[in-house]
Structures are given as structure tokens and as C-alpha cells.
Length: 101
Image 1: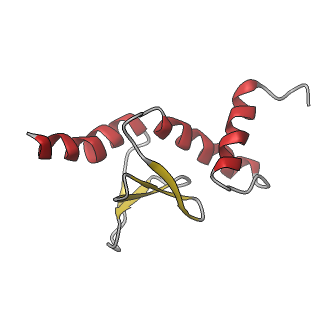
Image 2: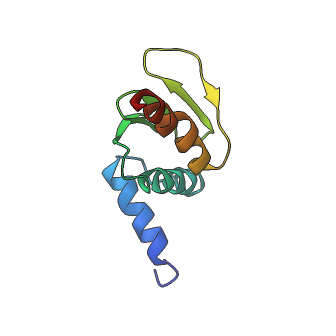
């Protein structure tokens, strides 16, 4: 237990909060990193959706494992870049900014 760093403990707490199973460390570490990157944005409302997916602002479903996202009630999945900041700014916050102008 001495090898566990603060980041790992923080990621584990996020897993527990979103009820993500902690048995597969590799997958869940990637999921937790993406979740942490999304949670950086204070304007986003993030909720657990289903099996490794989260729903953002009640409109976008985002996979925590793969670089895919879709709109709620639509069946077309889109790919996004590894850069979470780019994804959020372009697709999620970008749309909100355009509608406010």
C-alpha cells in the first residue's frame, strides 16, 4: 500500500462515486483519468449513465473508455480527439456559446 500515490487514491474515490468497478485496473485508470479531465470544467453537469458512460449536461453521452460520444436519443457515435479540452470546448461548450450569441 506504500506504492499508492495521491492521484491513484483520488481516482479510486471517483470510481466509487460513479459506481465504476475497481477490478480491472488498466481500464478503470483510463476511465478515471478521462473523468478527472472532464471534471476540470466547472460548467459541466456530469452524471453516471450506463456501464462506463457518463452523460454531460443532460445532452451528451460520452464513453470514458473510448474516444466516442453521441447525443442523447441518437444512435450515431462520433469520435473525438484524445485532447479532452478540445472536445469539451468545441462540441459541448462551443454549442452553448453559439446559442447564447
